Image (tube, rainbow, N blue to C red; front, side, top):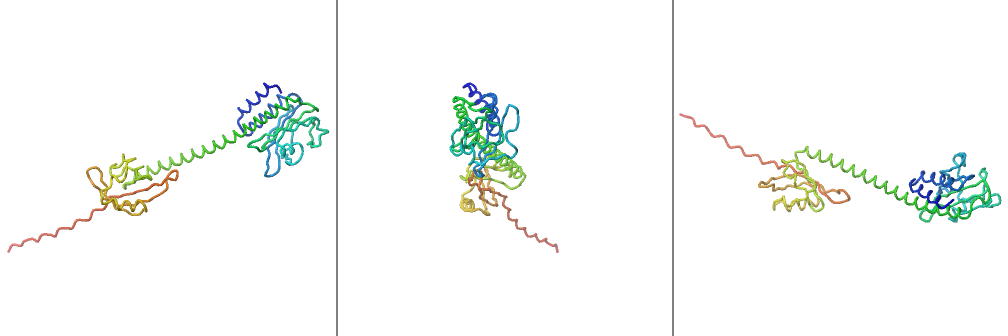
Length: 298
């Protein structure tokens, strides 16, 4: 494998990204770069079940290297040795190598190299040639370097996939929150009651258009500024504990007596918030004036 071929394979791995595309790119490009009479396989290491499983393979003839559902114990053969030692192993002649376990394939020599992420062997690149002593020392060294590059890219790929998953979740939550907020605003706009949402600093974060839109432009303003002095104590109690409340609001030049309910809740990001619904207080009925007695003429 010339140095320029090594660089080409590395570039293709970067373009492939992570996961299955990377495994296929690794075995295909390595086989083409090393030369004729070579096949390549990539195994994922499953420590929980003590197995390695082939996930990608490439041959010149296109023949299948491993049967369906092929697995191998982590503790056996050349692959098991590489998983255990986390070091590349080169069997120059497999017929005389004590670690070699034949899977029925014709093989003369074999390179088995670990792919590592965060210090753990997560994958195995296995390259087999149909003749002994098939790989020059510089080829072995470049295969080892290539697996180091693949491990770094897999690590980055895992992190990127995790980031994408988190970003997708955040977008989903944002979209759901925006949809809920829009539905709430639509519902609140149809009510005759004044609906307010206050933030943790007692500032108005939302006001519907009730009461002639009296507080439609009050966002960001302190709710206390709209209360008369007599309502301040009532609000302090209700604002902290929630419940029914009677207030008098100063709206421009007029004051409006109101009755309603205060509901503390947790807003976005865990921030404290308060929902306030108010209706104009019913005016006491005026007493009917007694009817005048009509004077009879005698």
